[in-house]
Amino acid sequence: MSQLDIVKRSSLHSIHLELNASMIEESRWERPNWYIDPDKEMAQITETVGICDISPVGKLFIEGQKLDRFCNKIGYKTSVKRGDIVPHSVAEGKMVLCRLSANQLLVFTSPENIGPMTNTLTPELSGCLHLTDLTSLYTGILVCGPQSRVLLETLTNIDLRESSFSNMSCVQGRVADVHCIVIRNDRKSMTAYEIYVTRDFGQYLWTGMSERGSDIGLLPFGVEVLGRLIS
Image 1 (cartoon, rainbow, N blue to C red):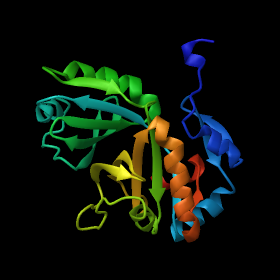
Image 2: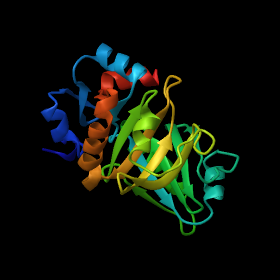
Image 3: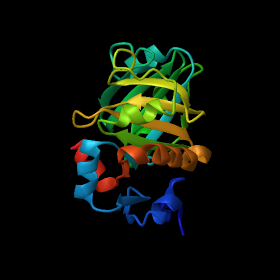
Image 4: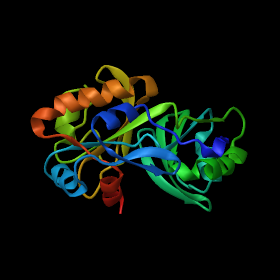
């Protein structure tokens, strides 16, 4: 089997199988398409909250000095401030820039665009800037729905109030007592958070969210509903 034949699985794969998810292959990843029924999953998210495995999203970590100059070189003309996330496009595709700190930038892109985006960004690195592909290292969980903030507030002391953590914001902190990157990126006018944690804590975090959310009707949802939230 060549490297191109390998289908990847997230750290949550065994949980998806335990939940009897209908699995599909998408962008060389095996992912849950749905768990019970896409329409029911969508309805539940609209009413309460749902969680989704978004681990395949491309995560390119850029660290070093002069990040503002780097952003200018790739065509983003204004400074990306700490705690902000901004969408940006280059000839090779779309990406989202997430400024974690003065010297740390996380670039998100689609799974199929990781290679082309890496090839585009690497020549623009200068000095002590370094790019690392963290896609397989981090598990990603999307929490979406009107009760998403209520759920997360039981697991973290991060200030999630609208006045402190508005849409298109990012922060590093502890969720379920584990260090995470938390991004506020609303979907379809619904409050939504993307939580990224190292792969070894992926199942722990998913299980913790599921247990805390059981009282408010939390359901997992798959790629089918995820597509509806993006379109």
